[in-house]
Image (cartoon, one colour):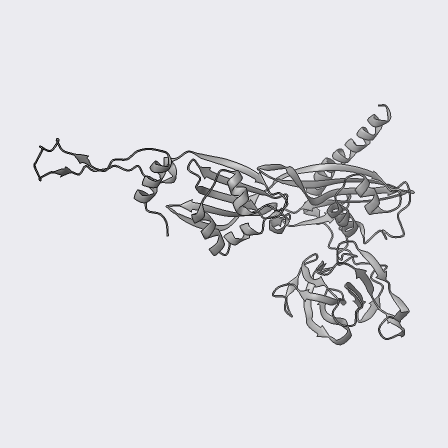
Length: 431
């Protein structure tokens, strides 16, 4: 229960060493007289509202082993009422699960009371597609605490990167400081044209432009965002793609000439190791005999997100004997895709649901006949199994004539930024 203003005012004054006299004595009493008179004066106690005391805002970095009370003490706060609220409120209880490296912002007044706490939820609260982050906000309002989640807009910037292929795409991007999330998007966008396990050659050159996002009051941490443009060149080949936003706000990848990217992702999970490919006769580790393997197995950690490789409708979601937990999607042109051995499904996923390319439909597991966590992925055309890694993927709808001019203007801008990389490389040779 909130402390009443009068009680809080008295305790505050006493804590600050102010002597308070609540009564005065009348003129001296004559000797021998048993009668006396007490005069009670009105005592004016200052209001204990938040506006009565100066406040200081503190930005604290969570260290290994930090607890909420320990961090607030570093900010000069000693507030049992706040701690009680944080322990009882469902949202505020997240403050007891602080993650090292995250930031906690505390507004504390001059007598040690917490007026506001804001805590970044880190990657858990990120919505990079919409450029927003979620924070937990707990504040004192009219003498009582309230808690809730707050959405904030991230600051968008862009970076350019260059790398020369030595052995693999991810080896090259790691060496150049290009985030893995961006490298995974390169595989998604160009995977319909390039086999990244077989087609890359030593000396191939990669140029990229990608988005970065930062929180307004935390510019020291960048989150990798969307791939904006990419060029892969070498051996007389050139592949490129750029992100183009339509007037209605939707976006899609096209090459610099306006041709649409493929309508399917080659990899349903972000680029992972392939443990077993498409074959007519594979030794089955559980059945102990050779049987056809009509899909591709991707090894990944349990709980890794599984994405819809193309836009379609959920035809089946449930369990199927050896496949364990499985999802089947139906797409246009007689195509179906199957995702098996899942740990679980996306929340609320049901038969008949419409999903878009890239939507999360489940999580990697080892249900059914599986010796370890992986995704078994199948690609069928009119009921016939195809090799997911080599099948020619259908193209997406082309860019309409009415949008080609807008696309061409954007392509000129992105080409100019990519050309800066050549200038930087050339300047570096003469240093």
